[in-house]
Image 1 (tube, one colour):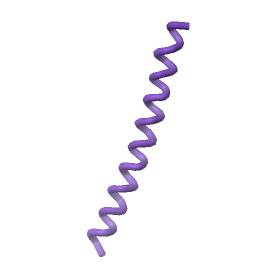
Image 2: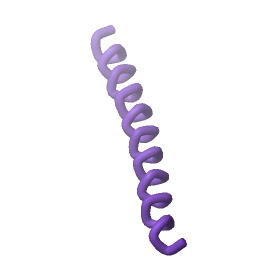
Image 3: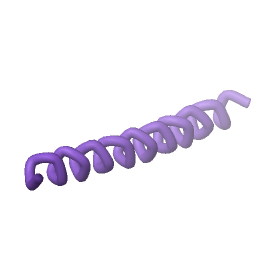
Length: 37
């Protein structure tokens, strides 16, 4: 049980990081588009 917990939390962390990176990249793209116009 204790061995599974760190892996579980790590996977959740990875999911959060992936989600944040997606949001971040979308924000960068929109800001780039706004600066071009």
